[in-house]
Length: 224
Image (cartoon, rainbow, N blue to C red):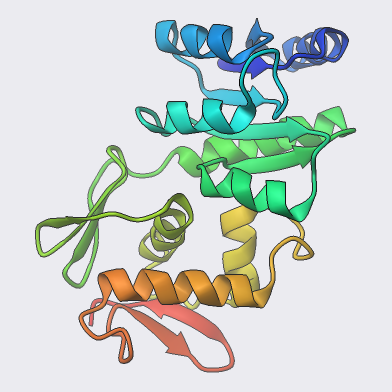
């Protein structure tokens, strides 16, 4: 049975959600605020974390940042603040998904399962050219030296390395990275992250040898 940590300050919503999740065979631990939520996380093992942005003490961004210091557990924001700025900020601090309220319970369950499935990556090192990823520790190295990537840069690189030699369209990359509708993420946003990532992993970012552009089609990670 998968274990979920629910951090939500609306007690009535939490009761209804807990009841539904339990009916879907999830074991749910509930906390109303940041302090109790992080305490529960430090004491137990969870397969997914659901957290609201507005909490009795602190906020969901702080919870996510604290969890990401030590864990790669799937984390999903549940919030009424579904504007583009909050959505992008949520993914920047390491969230796997961002679901606006009100939401459909069965859709939530589907997205929880999807987030957990995506996190079940191989325990072996992933390598392309002179760059390697340790998925368990979340560490990226180039020629043995650690690279420091943002959460979205890391997720983008992970998508490429787990689909090496496969053509990935821009639409596919946006869907894999953010799991939200394209109205929240523009092509220019993807351009920015591709540029930043290449500046960190490529010997010559202007002539990339690891992540190739397939003009008019998308991108492909190759061994060079």
